[in-house]
Image (cartoon, rainbow over all chains, first blue to last red; front, side):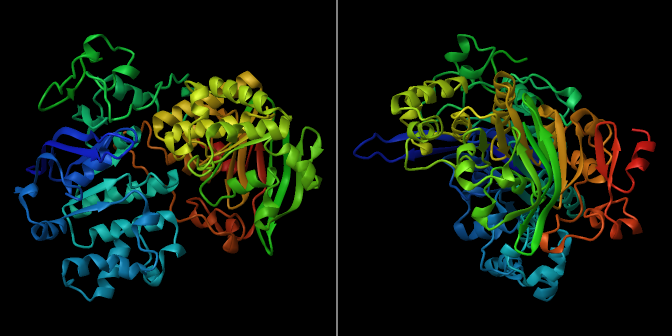
Length: 317
Length: 320
């Protein structure tokens, strides 16, 4: 399959303006991220809060302007596009947001919420709008009878389905899913994941799936990128590949098995993600890593391979 | 320590909670599990005596704590218990701390109110508790404001507040739902250690069966304001007898291979104004038959566990 999306050395540096009480400082939210997403595949991006995974999603859609690197979408270099060209292209790449409670305007009926993409893109649907909306609602497993409802009248899981229906309205080829189930119950999460699987098969969609839940990513995705403080620290070519980076290993060990017999003494990762503003030299994970050596504190490890199973660690497992 | 019998709660004419029973002893962890809207948090609120604040009232049953029935306790006496001998850890650490007050005073207040400690003694106690919760440099943290801390750290502060008055019972309402998996693992480990070290009785409310499997000794599964299955954690996971419990376990993606499809539970939790007749789960149940729509199932007891399903025995007969 050809690559639908090619990301090369994508970076974003944020600067906070100084003031009377503090100096201006800067941090890399995303640094040197590269990957290929072939048509029809699902790549998962995992990491803790603040690792840059949501920023990465927004950079790819150019909702945030990257500071460096390249994004190719179906052969088009996105970073060279003008705002109006970009807007046209966005019809083919859509995003589903984390919080369905704030992603839909509370004063819009579901009909208006789902038909808004057509207005914005100035597209006339093939069928009458009411029919189109009913089809979209049905596609995401909602009763078309809900079309006149307002967001406050439906549940969180239903709202997320509306978010998905909106994203699908213009028949995109790429869907960026930014923690689409993080604010939902596990039972509803399972419904939404099942729906996304069906839609992928039925519509031939390609997904970039952002999540902090490694076990969910392992279930749902074909390939996995593990991010820590803005960098990809490990790229797993398939979900069965054993973790080689100590951070990935820790993420795997932090998830619980739904079986009391597999209960284990968790040795949780001590400490917290350091502030990205003043990172120490060397590997960003060194302070929390059980295998860290002197080398790790002086030299930043680079991803070992361009393709296949790549790991950015001086002492991989 | 805490013994809830046949608890019922009403708001005006609607009855969102009925017939809820459970017991939890010292050094024991009880999980209350179910989807949003199944009545888990309402159960916690009833035990904490917080119902009158939101216009609800207890219509039946007893909440026995250390031998006394809390449903008959006057508000003044309840105040001594609440936050004192019964601690509460709320779901959202981002909103349960006062953003305008430093951490130190917020935690101090609990010990000052419930233990009558002086400012100085309360602060010493706060720093000691923060230390046991593995918070680095407690004295420094006391001078910080909530916005200067991460979500996991704030949740630890909320736990510290719940522990400050040395409670016997701790009720944790979805303590890790808003947190990253790594931080969730830290907090769960911390609660586990606290139960053992302090001989606490912990009531852990969650929607995630994997959290239950990791920490609890006993489980109560709730649906539409009722307990539908309860028992020791091994029994519940080995042989879940209620279809709802089975469905909740099947929602966890852990360890599934790609061939197994994550199914979820079709439909949504009914709201209190339209609780179904008969077995409340029947509209979503794959096994429902005519009897389920009319007759409410009684608990079918097997060993230490019990399931309220007309076909619980059928589940027993099938191979695991």
